[in-house]
Length: 322
Image 1 (spheres, rainbow, N blue to C red):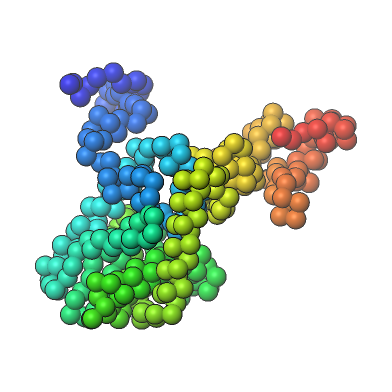
Image 2 (cartoon, rainbow, N blue to C red):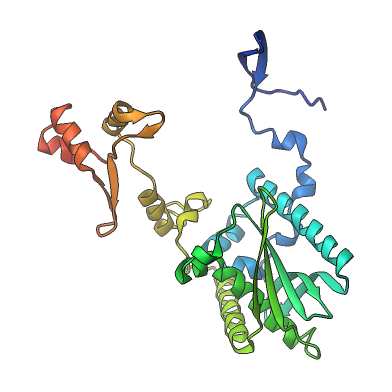
């Protein structure tokens, strides 16, 4: 197959060092032309009723539920994220094994419950030091000293919960005789490979609490899928904007949140924006979100614009919206 193929090109004139030439550019995503999609499919996360993953159970259950029901496939963007994460995971794992030794890499964890299994995979276990390590790739690294307790929990609480639950399961099964003592999360910035650590001691009581919570979620999800019930447990946050099921049919609450996160566009607001936009930035706001009423309301400047420049009546101003 030709690499050229059918591509939608746009021609541009470019002048470099006083020499002009014509170049062809394309805004098409040519992912499938340059990557073997069959090799990038994440077989570990393939959907099968009765087999549920620790990491997915920590996220929005409603999204996980619909991923089974609708047989949602990974998008090219998701495959790209998985690929970059896998490359960095393998490099760090191999480096740890090479320089520190005595490590178990990619240790699967299978919790066989009564009528379903919970699956997990621990990135690195240092046998001699009794350390469990989980590797997380991220788009940015924080300054931990500047994070307050609530922000830290929001960003990293789920990671800590996952590692503690893994450790509890491992210490009750594979490592019962020689249990894990220290838990470590390696955070890697994908943009520049900067690395930071979160480390803490294993706490059996907290680990058991987290572990049982995950089991409860798995049981609820399994019942929904096998008894043909709609999953009513969901988690709303800013990531709902990117969820494939954030519509009024599958997740009306998510759709409502996305609506609240998306600035309304009307002919009037577009006109106002063009009038006051400077170098791509709005000089004055035209909508603002009211946290009390959970609605978008017109700013004073926008109302002034509608009254004075558009000469709208109060009734017409009231009708502007979505």
